[in-house]
Image (cartoon, rainbow, N blue to C red; front, side, top):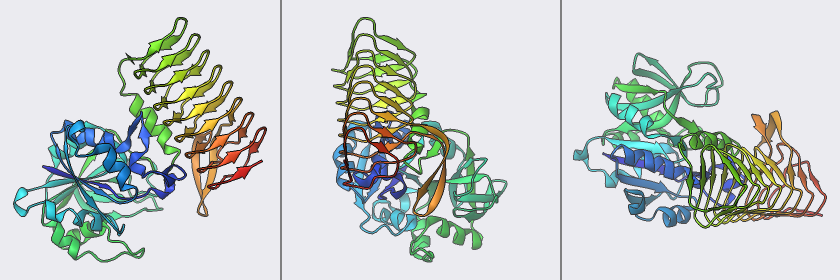
Amino acid sequence: MKAVILAAGEGLRCRPLTFTRSKVMLPVANKPILEHVIHSLSENGIKDIILIVGYEKERIMDFFEDGINFGVSIQYIEQRSQLGTAHAIKQAARFIEPDEGEFLVVNGDNIIEPRTISNLLDKRGGDATLLTFKMEKATGYGVVVAEGNRVKTIVEKTRMDISHLVNTGIYIFKPEIFERIEQTPISDIGEYAITDTLQTMIDDGLNVTMVPTRHKWLDAIHAWDLLKANSIALEQCEKSTLKGAIENNAVLVGSVTVGKNSTIRSGCYIVGPVVIGENCEIGPNTVILSSTSIGNNVNIGPFTHVQNSIIMNESRIGPHGYISNTVIGSNNTIGPYFVTEQKENLEIGMKGKLHHVDKLGTVIGDDNTIDHMVLVKAGNMIATNCRIGSKNVVSQELPRNSIVI
């Protein structure tokens, strides 16, 4: 069976992190989300992958190349205009022969595990099958109304309590779906949605079925959702892997992974699950607590406290900092005594809408320089290429190329 992975979108709601990379390349447990998806397919014996790319495609293609290093074979197709999921799937038509049988479609920006895919493979049936995930709060998601396993209606981004079965965007189709896509009407927002294709099939009496799963599935919609995804992914780390140097009097508790050529200095206290990449310098007397991922070539100064956070590649954090429930992008230079305030039950405005966040410090994009003694108030995000002078309090969102004196 072949798999089509949809990875062309930008991920606008994950800004500022997606100013410089597509959403599928955001790291979770020090691996791009897309790598987790490919691993789950490979573990189910699905090695032939068609990757639909678009925004920042070079970054994806340079990382995965032909797929051989990931145990799969990858063919790339560019979706030049993002005109919806049905339009994206249609791009793969020339790579799927009519006599090849079923093929799988999966989003490249969802966190899944191998059992999520095997669940669908084991229970598929009908003219098309989609995977659902039960959520108590399903408003804002596409949901499925079904009788038994037969789908009756698919409702996109409902604001009413119609169903708790969320459409995961993972499907099994037959090649005949491409003919159906040709008949798909354009939506009100100018896109061709595969859910509209499926609804026309249902209306025409075809048997569209659904398979519910209880295994891992998470859609990191906003940048702060990466923290939950990171925590879930790190929970799968069963034992420590120590390839770097651990100095005397450093204490490591639980599952802690340290990459090669990394050094954990004396007096550090690290409680897993924690992943530290390659060529990192940590400490001395640094505290790193659970659900934290630190990328490659990261330097964290002494007496700094980090917990439940993501620090991406090439960043440098000065001494005596406090970083909690925060995502820090790549190539940031942050001075001493940097503090992220954290709060619970925040309301963050994006494009005129308020979004509830359970707990957050901040989200910082790439290529920023922050001088010493800077405090970032909870929920205020810093974009890319910003310069923040010493002894400042960041109490509002900073757009790209901001200068704070």
